[in-house]
Amino acid sequence: ENGRADFRFYHASMNADTMAHLSLENELREALATDQFVLHYQPQIDLRTGSLVGVEALIRWQHPQRGLVFPDDFVPIAEDTGLILPIGDWVLQEACRQLSQWRSCGLNHIRVSVNLSASQFLDPNLPDRINALLRQYGLDADALDLEVTESMTMASPADTIGSMNVLRDNGLTLSIDDFGTGYSSLAYLKMFPISTLKIDRSFVKDIETDRNDADICDVTVLLAHKLGMDVVAEGVEDQATLDLLREMGAGQAQGYHFAKPMGLEALLASSLIGH
Ligand code: C2E
Ligand code: MG
Ligand code: MG
Image 1 (cartoon, protein in one colour):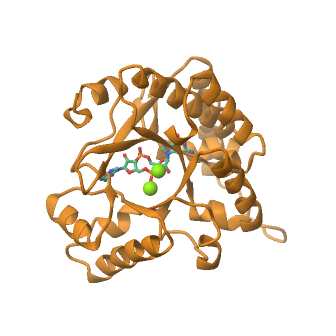
Image 2: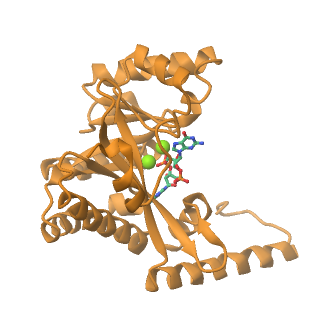
């Protein structure tokens, strides 16, 4: 990983790391085979109307011994080992399956955002696979929003524009996740067919006390609107933060202030659904 012409002295802890990595890899394979993953959904709220406009699907691993494991503890290893491809495919399929289920409950206007990993996003089969899933579950393409990160798009901007255009032409929408934390090129940003910028939680959380963070949020809202994009502020935890974001003109938000990510049952029972 450190490139050529480099050396390290052996230390026993390296063995332990490798063993832990290996056993996690095997456990992830097992988890896929025995259906241990679940999707939780976090509501996204329209700040003008206060209504639910979408949900973000977030994967969790229901581990038989360790309980609920969060993505930060297994997605990086899934990415290293290539297992993120089948896992990501499971996420897409499960999100479509559950979406068709709540469509049949009469919830027609809610879209689901799915987080993509770099290898998934660059997989040339992705658009066909998504089309097949939409057909299988009888869904319109605008029901699905795909979240990609700046670093994924900047690794190979020319390919990215190509993949994004195919997905957009198929009717899907695309969002940039964690905006502001990667290396963005504004020159490319304006060429990407992106519908939404998601302002990273690290800028939102101290918006009341940190002038720089507040300015970054303000300018991001402005930038997004100038480029014809919507804004979702991530990680809104209190009313004061929400008030500031609303003043800045942010259109949508998600965060613990509204709801934590929850299972489908809980979501369907939630007051946000407004039956
Ligand atoms: P993300 O896509 O930026 O998701 C937002 C994360 O912030 C979620 O963490 C969510 O639970 C958390 N969050 C939301 N509101 C608040 C808040 O008000 N306060 C705080 N403290 N946290 C909040 P989670 O579910 O642990 O996911 C972490 C990351 O794992 C995600 O960041 C995403 O990058 C990745 N991830 C999740 N699901 C998937 C997936 O299906 N595929 C891939 N490739 N990555 C995923
Ligand atoms: Mg996300
Ligand atoms: Mg994010």
